[in-house]
Structure formats: structure tokens, C-alpha cells
Length: 146
Image (cartoon, rainbow, N blue to C red; front, side, top):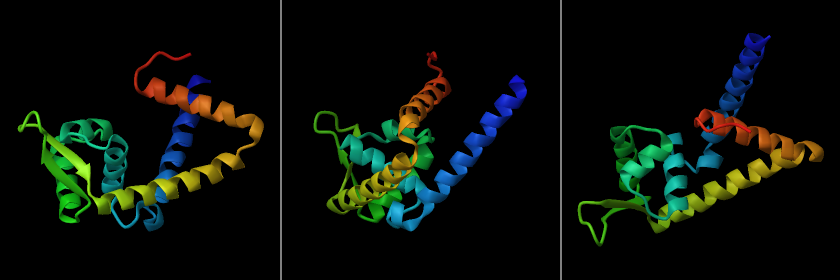
């Protein structure tokens, strides 16, 4: 029975990831940037400023991949790299004014989309769905469950 249930879990997660990937790839949600750039913009926007290593860790990417993504965002005038005022060796990544506009658009589009999904869940099941997703994330991150 466990094997069947774990296969069913795998299938549900596979479909969820696939369907969310299709959603996020749509130009209206990521405002004309790639998926990697979209995720980077969101994380930088939420942090206000972040190091390349910190961003790579959050997005679970290697430093060279993250660096290429940031280089493209710099070229597109969406982010800037600045030396930290107290430690010139430490580089801080921040959104430009143009990047902030893209960040706000992405956040608004995604918030609206997920609000539509959330209100489509029967009201008496909403807390259960959120709790289940939190448990799943905790287990994936190696935290103890329940």
C-alpha cells in the first residue's frame, strides 16, 4: 500500500510542478523575463538587497548559473551590483527602478492568480490544503513533521 501511495504522491507533485511551471512561463506572469530571471527578481525584490551567494542558496542554483542570470538582469537594467559600504569585497544586488516595476507587476499578477485558485478551494478545505503544503515543504527541507 505504501508504494502505491508514494507513487500517487509523486504523480500529484509532478502534475502540480508541471502545471505551475506552465503558469509561471506565461509572459503575463513573468513580465517578459525567463523563469530564472523571474525567480531572481522576486527574491531580490523581497529581500531589498542580497548577495549573489545568498540568492543562489535561496534559489538552489550554483554560483555560476546565478551569476549568468544576474549578468543578464544587469544588462537589461533590472538589477545593479554595488559594493557593500562596510566591506568592499561583498557585492550587493539590488533592483533598479525598472526592476522594481517588473517585481511589482510579477507580484501583483501572481497574487491575483493564486487568489483565484485559493477562493476556488472549498472554504472548509482551505486550511487543510495550506497545512498539507506546509507539512510537505517541511519534510522536503528535512524538518520533522507534525
